[in-house]
Length: 390
Image 1 (cartoon, rainbow, N blue to C red):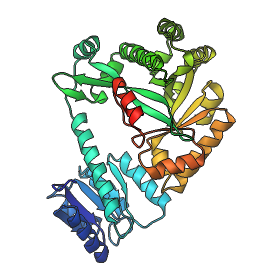
Image 2 (tube, one colour; image 1 turned 180 degrees about the vertical axis):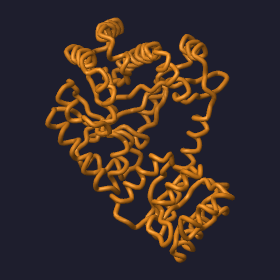
Image 3 (cartoon, helix red, strand yellow; image 1 turned 90 degrees about the horizontal axis):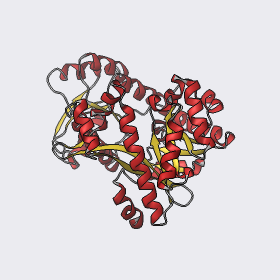
Image 4 (cartoon, rainbow, N blue to C red; image 1 turned 135 degrees about the vertical axis):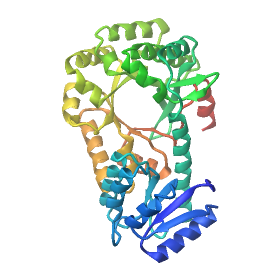
């Protein structure tokens, strides 16, 4: 637990404040401030900057919703946890608003606060803090990135995908990771945007895809058929020669096309529909799977399903994770599943992190799970050990 964490309790019910303080003491957190409304909190934040703000919404004086706006204007971006008893749909809307202002929202706690739920929130805060350290790493030059590609420092790590019906390992998503001998693990945000800016993302995708195909062949060699999904950018998908190169590589390594999935975001499809459609149609004609990622986050979701030959739909993690407590998010997941069935597509739930989320997605009829609950991204050589130890 983060015993050194600084916490602000924004709550106008003194009974809840006392109860909250006792829970925080039990997990070893001693630096705790409290405010009865948003105005008091803003005055306090001029002197201290807590790591986490546990924020009620409906309060006398300045409420929590207005507080969030003023806090962002004041340059305060502590992580937020909502402790409101309001309807889940209202809280979810405020969470979205807070994220749009730049806050990290760790979740929601019911009142009175339960110790185990508080521990989970604090664990999420620790993960967020580690990610922030990575994201603050230096930005590298183009030459450094190219050198890393040439030296095989940038490789795909594979996050397992398992079936909800039997829990079997059915696939993995390839994620670019840079393991530098001098800097350690480098966040993709430190190198992928630069490659996209200078229009050299093809170099990265070519390296990641070939290494992913090689790993797929390695799994085949030990008798395990594991589908490998690789993300492709808009620039990749507007290259009309891409299908030919992909099929040539699969033929060279002896990997069946049905074991490869090309993932594309909904926004990427919208950018150049004609060329992207041609590229994806030719891949599907040759047996390669095509998946639409981040589905439901754009403005023309259903239209894309009717135009592009997708055979897999990935339900965005924001809907998956919110669906446990938010009826609106659950309704979106249900509609995605229904649409996928009508279009004869498999469904993948992204971002499954808890048993509660697993149980809900399984009960709703989602086909495949991808998330920390079943497996974190790992090197290809570690995947067999993960599989055997499950």
